[in-house]
Image (cartoon, rainbow, N blue to C red; front, side, top):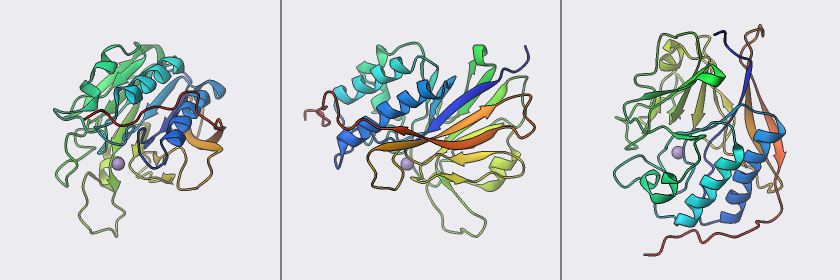
Length: 256
Ligand SMILES: [Mn+2]
């Protein structure tokens, strides 16, 4: 089957359940889902740090699961350093057992590929089980492709060529360049950044609210994958209005 013309919305670092402004994180996540509908996206990718920490309440997880159901389209989640996929991972908790079928969690800590045949799309990611210099978010990323679109997801720190400091979860330029991806959706940085390498398009989306203090709108990456497009993928940021208050404030901390 020929590749379809598809649109992806990419975000990261939503930090649901963070305790400095939990209502804003909740409103921002809802605005991301609003953006999926507003921009008629075919899939939603969230590249890690969806949740702020593993101690958050089930109410926060239930809110997230219900918002992903509201997204309707396939939603692919990659665990990051704040929401690790380890033995105590929040992704193993009960609310995820009742999640809708469109919600996909990347759980393979050595990398896994999720195929979405209806979108002619393969999504590769490696779930983070420990945030250390030894964890390589792009280790094992496919270097050959089949007939589908191939999108990678990774959560970590991109090393610019002059960056010699050793960081946890490093992403190196050559790893991006050597991959066969049409797009790599990155997370971990708060800001939007183009780190494309050697003809492979790779962007940080930044967190929905970015580094700004504005609490009335969010920004997400739109990624248009169109086989007819000369300049493919076309990647740009769009903004989505945020509601001014939450319908139901959530108790963010789990009972001890
Ligand atoms: Mn992070």
